[in-house]
Figure (tube, rainbow, N blue to C red):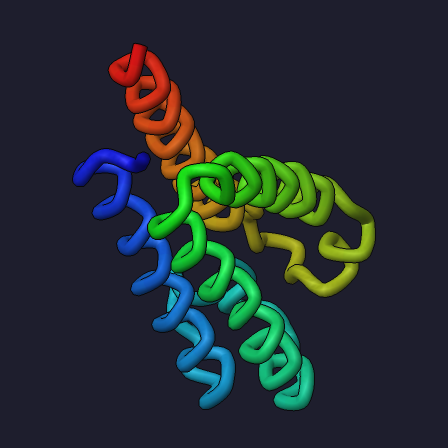
Length: 132
């Protein structure tokens, strides 16, 4: 069973992903809710992302309720960090950035997601060891 701190951390993810979905649906391009907030985009892409983020919402609700799902949610966040890192390093991103535009803001957001993932992993590990 997930401890209260683990549930709070997972439900915090639910809240974050809900806000992200709303921001993408309405194209409210703000840092934190949009990783690539200052790059060119098409509104239909934001709508697709908004609906796709609903899968994260459902996954994190299930993870908060069922310990067995929590490890899957952590794994998906690891995959997300790897994917964002790949985009951050890509030529495709470089082609849409202005010459003076840095990727540092994207790396910060990727790092924040990685840190959240590590917090979840530590809580999950602690819960598993407290049951012994």
